[in-house]
Length: 453
Ligand code: TYD
Ligand code: MG
Image (cartoon, rainbow, N blue to C red; front, side, top):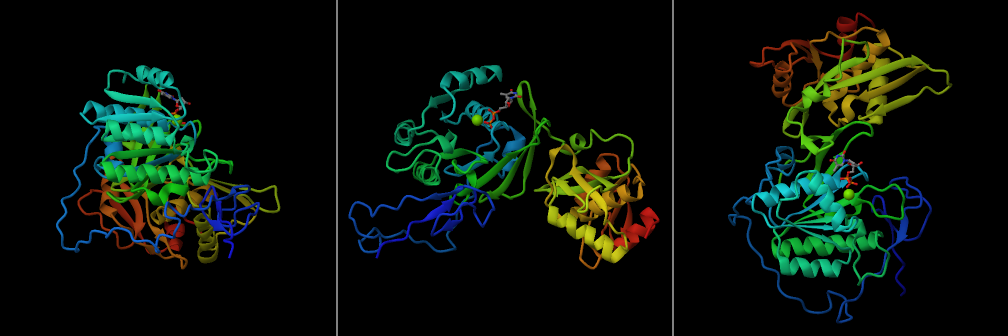
């Protein structure tokens, strides 16, 4: 029986038995590619039909020491890695082109190298001279980093085998080309094959390998998502155009907490660490204005304060706009529906814009109440007190649910000069010195804070 060909989406990795113009899983157009068939191997038999070696088995009680970690001294990076670089780990660093991945990794490599790690930086995108020029501009030229410009995976693996580095950077995985795979560089098959070879090398030779992956918009080039499942750690480097802030976010980490963030600022001299992101995210805040609410959030293991901004205006269109940056659009729709159904505050005929200041992205449901407060403040044209932070999850009934780590959130708020917090009913202030305004449900917030409803 002839095997049906496999097709796979270059954006999200969904597979199909036949080609189509649009991926049903992620909705992208022209991203579906044919995947090269697997070869039957040297024996020509399927894997199960010929005899392999026995796998070494252990039991669950076997004591395993925690992995020794190498730190770079760049604390924002070390924390996102879960406390440093784990030997033999495979790490993917994804992000939009031009966001600063190469800059970050060059600085990181130099930092690890200065601390005695044997580091190799392979660039498939830039000539060695270009990388050297950047290193000189960043004041890193003296760091003992070995540099290579190559895209041929076979040659790279041979070099890695002889050099035996402790850390190897591959910039980027989309430029790598395995000569035993019959498809173009950047295709899903090539990218997966290259990532597979390199992660295998990491385990076999005890080398930490960092793969750079560009987030791509066109379907011709596979995105980093197609290799996320192969690596131990997935980091995304994010930022808004026009903002100098960059956020390194762990979305998967076998060796540390996911959702951890590191905050950097892109300057003329490369990326600078931002040790106190709350102060940075709130720095653009002026006088208290309608539509603004400060959310006391938790990112990974660290509390971070961010400003939420809302604008509500009569719409000239039959269908009002719902525009949101840095927060989930579905969640915004839910909060608008709860405000309407449970508090009698309609948003029909009104355009709603919601923005998280500073280019942050918030995923916590704990921000619900801050979003609602920003929306109400905008709609009622009433500013919240300047010394006030907000957090709490909203349920469909309009009730407020307590959230985790309330004390940490309050402590950070107190540290930054805030003194009151609008919070769900059973939250405790502990020894934070913050004055709480406990609320049972959204209707109480509407009535007591905004005198509306
Ligand atoms: P780069 O690291 O090349 O991005 P990526 O590898 O993600 O594609 O960063 C490119 C941008 O960063 C470029 O627009 C210039 C800017 N940049 C600075 O602002 N300061 C610097 O010191 C460096 C090296 C780059
Ligand atoms: Mg680059």
